[in-house]
Amino acid sequence: MYKLEFTYRFESAHRFTKGASKCATPHGHTWFATLGFSVVADELNQQDMVEEFEKLKKTWKAFITETVDHSFMHHFEDPILTSLKEYVKGFRGLPFPCDPTTEVIAALFLAKGRTLCGNLPFLPSYVSIQETPTNRVTLNMEGLDAVLNRIDSKCYKAWWQSADSSSRELSPA
Image 1 (cartoon, helix red, strand yellow):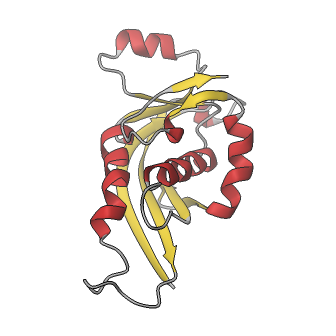
Image 2 (image 1 turned 135 degrees about the horizontal axis):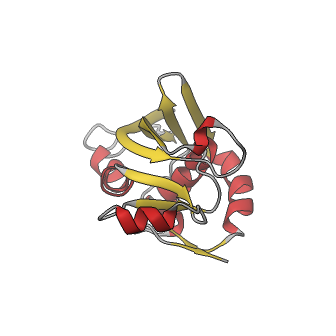
């Protein structure tokens, strides 16, 4: 079995709206997002590869670098959004149906990876989100549906369901 991984670094902020933790203050991190593929391959293709890397990483890279990088990941009902949109010219928000914890970010990024790779010969099998040098969450595809069942029931339309790597849409149910 081959494991193919594509990691991109991005700068992004988030905050939590539930509880009284220090994460209620908007704060940023240097994040690393790895999309992984586990591929059973008895033979390599004619180019001596499992698959051309460019095919697998193109839309993932676009999503991370063009949509997520320098965005504020936020609960779609965060009460500070009105002020941010009013006072921050070109505000780059990425809405979540709940607080953007590292666990939720991992789940929705894996869902986005699955959507982006829908027309490829195989789908991603895991995502790993590193929030700090000491904190990382990895989610395998087997755990994704249970999380999405809870999250997707809150949304009519959402960016992680769209094959458009630049989508920032979230319409609550």
